Length: 372
Ligand code: SF4
Image (cartoon, rainbow, N blue to C red; front, side, top):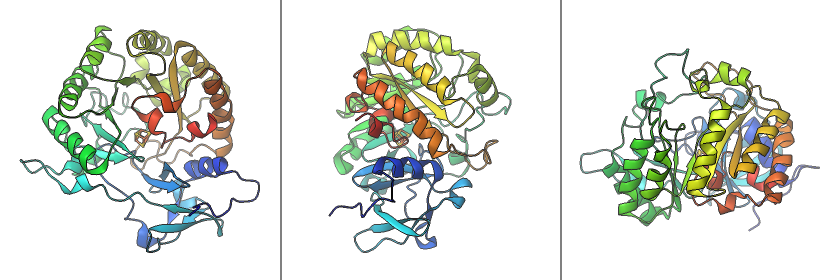
């Protein structure tokens, strides 16, 4: 069945997805709880939605999503819902089924869903350390960050051991066919900045199951960590810039901004030498104050180095200082993703060639649809 009924007049599928990801989705009360998968590493406030075969993350539990023109009705027997925009049915959507590995637990009684969770269509994600040296102090914490919330709400455990991660990864591959894994971490110290904990975790997972892995952390102090990570089998690496101009970095990520963009660019060059062109990426949040031009300028530099710049719409999370910050408009997203998609295609840097990670998953941004 062609799941796309029709598109809003003058709207392409790409525009519809970009709009919905910026504006969010309201659900009929009966279904509001159904899609949330819960777990350790979920992009908070968002839910996976499949539309025309593509799974994207859509803000659904945020303040701004309450105002969205997009509304979904309860799913029918096949699990399909009508998607309405200002009351007009524009497409049909479905919610990915509950993963089977969520029903298991470790021998010591920790549910697997508290250790890692399924994101997008086929990626296993874990926040290995659900804590950060900066988060106790709002003056140094990233203003959008809610890393402590799942822990405080009992939805995860603080430190997932290498053994636990290996056990869950093996089950997720066998039971749910996951294709790649993302391991991210809060920053535990100002030296390796999480590289060691990720190294130990990746080694255990790779020993248990053949699964491409991306690790995500801040640039470690010792560049030898890039080779160490690759030695234990890590396939790709991400270091999040989040914002690109000094003013926005100082305001939004005051602690992380101690490392300048220039410092990140040096780290990216070294990481690309180890992991290869296109296997190193970064995440940039659009909508926090950086202009489209500023973001595109930095993206061009990144692409020159061989880094995939995954630009995603900022999602304001409840309970953070940015809870009432507006989400980026669809127009801003299109003004960035359009030219960026062309840049990536022209330089042969495509999401589909990334072995593992957010860029390959592509659920938190519609960037890959602009690479065609
Ligand atoms: S892009 Fe990354 S954070 Fe977003 S759903 Fe995919 S794996 Fe998760």
